[in-house]
Amino acid sequence: MKIEGKKVIWSEYQKEIADDNYFYVRSCIRQNFFPGSEVAFLRIMRDVLKKDVFEHPCHTTCSGIGYHGDVVPVETAMTVVARQFSLMTEAGYTNYVPSCITSFGLYTEILDTWHHFPEVEEKVRRQLKKATGREFKKPENLAHASDVIYKFRKEIAAKSKYRLINKETGEPLKVVDHIGCHYSKMFPSKGVGGAEYPYVLTGMIEEWGGQIVDYPERRHCCGFGFRQYLVQANRGFSIACSKEKFESMKPYQPDMIITNCPGCPMFLDRWQYVINEMEGKRYGQNGEGIPVFTYEEVAGLVLGYDPWDLGLQMHQTDCEPVLKKIGIEYSPEDKYNLAIIPSYSDSHKLINV
Amino acid sequence: MGKLYDLLLEDIRFEEGLNACMNCGVCTAICPAAEFYNYDPRKIVDTVQSKDEDKIIELLKSETIWYCGECMSCKTRCPRGNAPGLIIMALRGLSQELGYFVESEKGRQQLAIKRTVGDWILSTGYCVYLDGITIAMHPEQGPVWEWVQDNKAELLNRLGGNYKGDGPGILRKIPEETLAELKRIFEVTGGMERYEKIESFSKTKAKEMNLELTEGIDNEYFRHIYKTNNGTHSR
Ligand code: SF4
Ligand code: SF4
Ligand code: SF4
Ligand code: SF4
Image 1 (cartoon, each protein chain N blue to C red):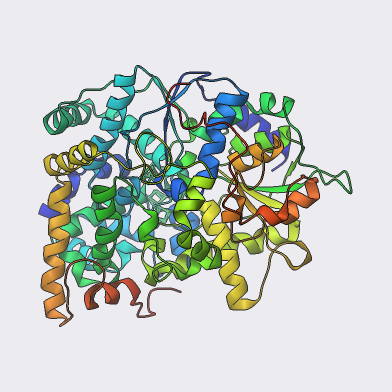
Image 2: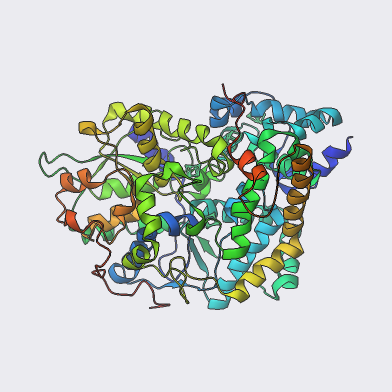
């Protein structure tokens, strides 16, 4: 499909994204694998965009991975989510922003179910009250953290130090986007750009100087599949899915991959390592892997944040080729130096700054 | 009408996920699990729709219902607005309620998920938790993960986290009162009952298979279900 055709589709899926006063909810997976990304999100929101973002210390897992691993029943998941809403209500917020795509998908699914089956919502309210004494209001606006960065992509571009351009050739970097399945496959109208041609990451990349690469398996799942990765015996499925994507994107010679899901940046990163160990095969240029980034990492790099403050040393597939292509100034020798004090303020730790 | 079909109807996801399937196979064409496994979501929807009690029992005991990755790609494309992925979730729920899950290799793995993700949710407040993601269980995490595991406290501090600390922030300690609330929610809403069922059906099965099953993950049965793949599942 031509880009013009997609623009028409994209214009049909313009979702509303609140512009300030966010209730931020973390992702368990991302806190473990991409802690630097959540820190970067808060730095960008608070220090660069001067927005109010509140994090409640008592929020928890949304139980989403347990729900999709089928050990947590749907009513339990709904009530755990209702408790998160109750924390939002208690703190006086109405704009709910989860960091996790799986979680975003779960919230969307639950709000949709409650809309169609009000008696289910009533039951969850009774159960939450019985279990915890809590009550709640539903969010007025639900947006994934990548929606929020998308919304402010132009402001970020205006303050950028670098662009996604190859310093040597002056050409835009070729970027592959990978959107989490649960972002919009269930409810296309809840994602920027819909399900078939989501625009949320493409919009960022285009604004920051890069060029999006379209390739056949663009919307194929990375292969997390919950139980298909969580249990060792099933991981063949997971790696086969990722491999299919790599094979499909390779001919387009992408410089990097950008993602907005909790799992995929990790799977796309680690499975490249495993495929190379097993078959001696790499998918990037010059015998390297294709570096995989979260959207916050890319936003942080564009804004001139230190790569090691962003946590890029936690990637298995080396990201330095991209840093060099862009011409980012950084110290390679500090990669594993843990004695460094971050170069930024502590604002990401404070409540309601 | 069959009894099992009625039980499925009680699951809200079933009601949402099934409206007169026309057997077109679009879901199978898009499904990543159908590409890899001997799996056909269309057939599952068709079997369920037939309301044939025996066939549904067979399904609940089968390997088939455990192949889906719950990516929901099928939901986007189904011309009838069905979601085979949601129907699968309802079937998996019922298979565990009735104890049929232990009759298949893939179904038995539910205990492994319960004893990792399931237990972490209640003990830590996180669905996955750094201390549990060991290299032994996750060799694919590579050398970088070994470095992360060896230096986790310093690394999280370096990156601005709040590992096991009070207040907000990354991998903070979830307060005791909060964990108690989570537990109460599980008790009131059937989560705990589900956990207990997974445990008790698995215990019976372990005995039958003559495999030792004690608490936690360091026992024969856990290792068996976590690692065994008889090689007949995929294409
Ligand atoms: S779905 Fe995301 S936020 Fe929810 S429990 Fe899992 S990782 Fe945590
Ligand atoms: S792309 Fe992978 S990690 Fe992301 S939602 Fe799909 S299965 Fe989950
Ligand atoms: S796509 Fe929908 S209608 Fe077609 S076989 Fe699948 S569930 Fe049935
Ligand atoms: S949700 Fe399951 S059945 Fe549907 S496309 Fe994904 S793997 Fe296939």
